Amino acid sequence: MDMEGEEDPIYEAERLIEKGDYPEALNVLGNLSLPEAYILRSKAYIEMGKSEEAIRELKEGINRFPYAHYMYYELALLYFNHNDLVNALDEVNNALSILPYSYDYNKLKARILFEMQEYEQAFDVLTYVIKMKPDDVESRLLRAQCFYLTGKFLDALKEINRALEYNNKDETLHTLKGKIYLETHFYKLALSEFKISVSIRPTAENYYLLAFSEYMTGECGNAISDSEKALSLDPNNNVIREFYESLRNMCGQK
Image 1 (cartoon, one colour):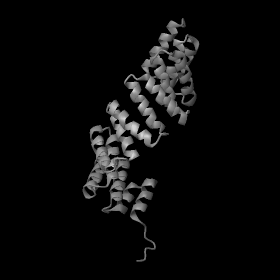
Image 2 (tube, rainbow, N blue to C red; image 1 turned 30 degrees about the vertical axis):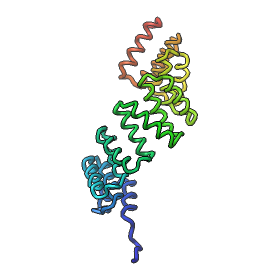
Image 3 (cartoon, rainbow, N blue to C red; image 1 turned 135 degrees about the vertical axis):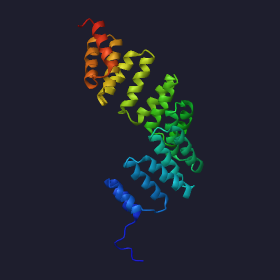
């Protein structure tokens, strides 16, 4: 058969979605019944703000192709992004029942469990994820947060330090490390971490945490200066404003 001049509809739809021409992508796909077509129609609907249609497409595709594990994953991801954690967990478990050793599926399951505040279960899944990919800094950070939120500060520090071996420029790692030092009253160590955080990403929160550490180590002038920077970045933040005003009173400034 002469295919000259014809394009694969899957490839063409992908190209159109990348360009942002979602209606035309749907038009090209038509009623094509392939797993990839259902996923692409779902993605087009998501970009058009039509989440119900996106869910419908994936469910229909799953009914037609019940062993297409990646469609369960796409549906789980869609539910997760809409904060429907129960359905997200159900669908990623469906994907894992077909392909239990998938790195991506297990990582998504860990993220869902973390958001559900099931930290012990999330930790167990993350342990498996990290075994598959030891340099996964994001998963190591998530596991460190599981430790932190359950009061296991030393374990959290160990995990952060391992993650920093792979990426010492990750601001979130330094910020969490600083918070742990604050919790355990190692204020000078916290100060060092927040200085790094601010140098990488000068946010209101990081300046506020830096200012608090400076106050706790007796650096009132620096604390006031950095709390002013925090307030300038987030002038409507009442916590920062109250801290700044308290600092001025405690440090003898009017």
